[in-house]
Length: 374
Image (cartoon, rainbow, N blue to C red; front, side, top):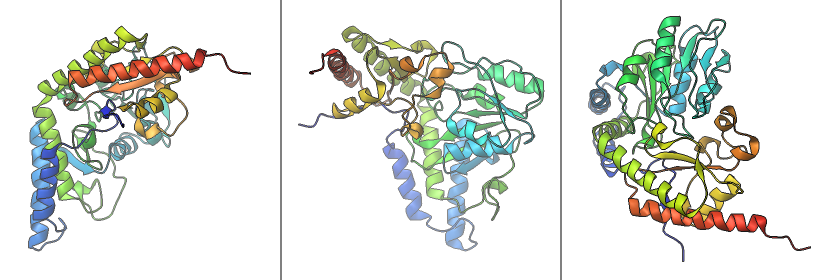
């Protein structure tokens, strides 16, 4: 009998909130036109698009024209990193960044901060000039909350813009200080109950140079026909996540902590970062004597979803680069697995998941130590 699936990989993506899906379908039915058309259907679509922009802006208490709708967090990071500051000068960032941030810096160059033992960027000046700074609000694999205020102070001191990737953190921890300090902020709807393919860049101060040119949509920053229904779904997801932040964070943390307590009572494992230093839903655990990739696959068969790190890197045989950057050896890095809860994860489900994980870990350890037949 196939076991009931227990999803502890919500940092990869979250199921769409039924209220968000309902909003998407409502706008798709009622505003099917091109928002650039001047006829009635086009005007209706344009009105729906602008209503979505206003809803998202109101939820975050930012100017309406700061919201630029895009197709992914990766696109938002590229628009900021390739479009802000002096492109002849490198980006100052660290290994905590999403791959899209580091890849976007390939043309301008990269200067790096080191990391502390909790996977936090050690924000400090570096020799030579830089064109901009970037720092995720929370590291995607470890969940470690980053010192954005220190990065903002350094950016002001250097007179360069700061970009913050908040795709993993919005709706899980407070966002007000990030919006106060950053020049641009990337968000991704599918991380907080929205639809995949919905994203936005919040252009709060410095204005980036566009990557795509054409019809001049999104204030000239993103050419291409916008989807009013996807924008409406993104806005609704953000509004719900922000409005329900306290209750969601409490539920996520309760499930995460119950999972950790149950698991550590059954099997030896260690969180790489103390839960108090992380997002409320995330923990990266290291299991001695167990290959993390093998564990993820075995857990899938046991009906527990987990990952070694970011879903965009799941095809790589290598563990997340951030683990090596924070000082772990190759063998230790390969023993790590990330678990992440949602507000919908119950404490009972978390405990059941922990029991399944413990059984699988013990079985893998027993297999690894079993003498091989000659």
